[in-house]
Every structure is written in C-alpha cells, then in structure tokens.
Length: 258
Image 1: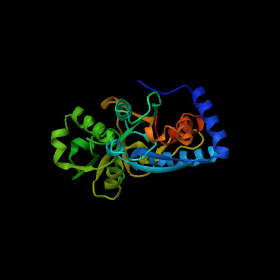
Image 2 (image 1 turned 60 degrees about the vertical axis):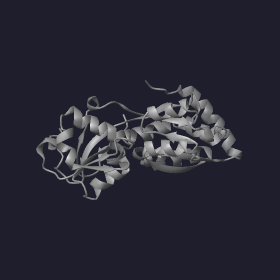
Image 3 (image 1 turned 90 degrees about the horizontal axis):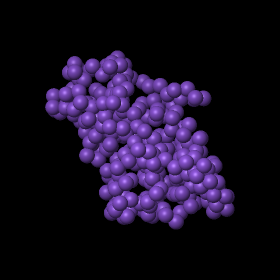
Image 4 (image 1 turned 45 degrees about the vertical axis):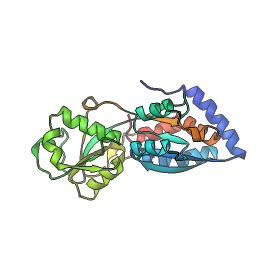
C-alpha cells in the first residue's frame, strides 16, 4: 500500500520551503539507496535550483543505512530501497511518524555487459552458459532479496547457488557485471538505462538484458521518510515535498521506475 501524500500537500510544503530557502538556504543530509543514486543526483540539482537548499548525498545498501541510523548517524532523510525499513525506523523512534511515502517502485533486470548473452526471456539462467551470477546481498539489499525470490520461483536457487557472487549493495553487484567479474547479474533497471527524454521511455544503454516480470518477486516499493535528526530542518521537509512534484516524478520515470 502506498503512503504517498496528496500532491496539493506537497505543493504547499514545497512553496513553504522555497519561501524559507530564499533567505535561509540550508543543507540536508540524505541517505539514498544505491539503485536511486543516479536519479537522485539529477533530482538534487533541480531541487537546489528550485529552493536554494543543497544536498549532502550518501548512497549504499538500505540495510547498512538502517544500522547506521540506529547507531546515531546524522542522516536527516532516508530514501530507502524498500518500504519496511522506514516503517521500522518510525516504530523504533528514529523517524517521524506520518512522513513516509512511496517515491518509486523498483524494476529488476538480469543484465550482462556482453551483447546477446542475456535473452529477452531470461532463459540463459537455465542454460548454464556462464560462470558467475551477481546479486546484491539479500540480507541487506532489497534488490538482492527480490533476485533470490526470482531464482526460488524459477526453481534455480539451489542449482545456481555455487555461481552467485554477492555484492554489498546493488551498486557493487552492478560493478561486478560491468567490469566482467561476473558474466551477468540482477541489477536495478535504473542502473543500466539511458534516461528517456521528452516523455520517451528509457532504453537499455549497452549489453543485453531481461526485464524481470514484476510477478516473479514482491513489489519493490521504495519509501522516503523524515528522520529524527531532520525533524527541525526546513530543507529536509522541502526535499520530501519536492520528491512528490511533477518535475521530480518526471525524472524518476525517465530513469525506468514505473
């Protein structure tokens, strides 16, 4: 279930943030899931242009961010790769109740840097014509957990277990494939697309890929939440509002998030 707030509320909050930012531009420290690092860089630039506020971005696995936040890391906004972590942080008193919403729904792809290796149906997984298959750590990275659900659903988890190469985050899993250390791997669609322009759909930048049917894994709902450290920071509230505006939504869609 989405926790998205109405666009009107977002517009009101953003307007307040712009007004405050005109004379008191601030900074917000953001922990962003690795799959969303590239879109967030573009969104951050647009946000700064609109409000005057600046971002200090850190990207990594959601599980590691959870551990750091609980331990007192001074992040003010979390852009999670799931919806469970923000709920957990709210329940434990580390995030502000009523501020979470779904900013993106992730798409998983099986990707290879080698053209023609991955077929459009993903049959390569059964062929065995590869040595290593990269995934993100399923214990700390939601995209890794989704990848394991796909392998289990296809009845291949046990057979392919010896070939798995596990990255700390989805960014590292992508790096394994991009550098050739793994022939193929499960990565986020946003990592391997050329963003769409003027309303056009994004396309795979290079190599070969199978866009995993969403029915093969639980929805990757990615929620944002205001953390306790940012509760009194107008820039943090303004960022959460901006993520719900039409310009931000257009950038998110352009990077392959349905």
